[in-house]
Image (tube, rainbow, N blue to C red):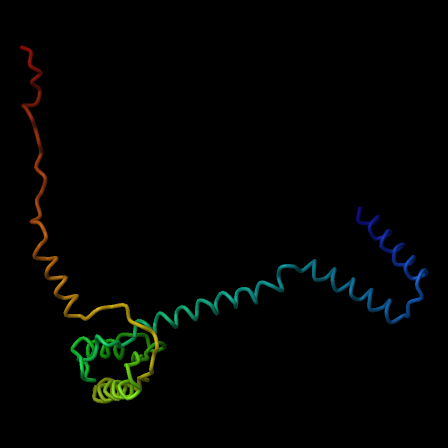
Length: 187
């Protein structure tokens, strides 16, 4: 089967060569292309595996980066209303980022305020807090446009307490026996 294909290809090339006057460079280029195409088909899919893997890894790296940005984000809930001072939840979040987050992802993101001056004040507040921490290394404070879909920590605390107080008392289900065992009603 393969032998027949080679014979037909050879006959076709010779027929084309005699039918049209081709220069040696055109014929050589044609044969070179046939050889490189055959090599490409024989080693498929190997040349395409590595770029595909790199594309998938790049997508995942972007997703991981976005996830850490959201995780390390200080939003308006972490600042006192009307002021640019950190709340207790904000100070705890900054300390957690400085101490617990893996060093590779140890960056603090501050969500933009309504004004550029407000954003600058927030970032300066966080930078001061980071500088005052006794265990800190240089943790960068960056501006972010991501939003935090959370809510204030005091509201979460209130909801947790409300759920705990309104929970039903735990009970063990007792065994329900309607009669004595072994009595079938006949004597």
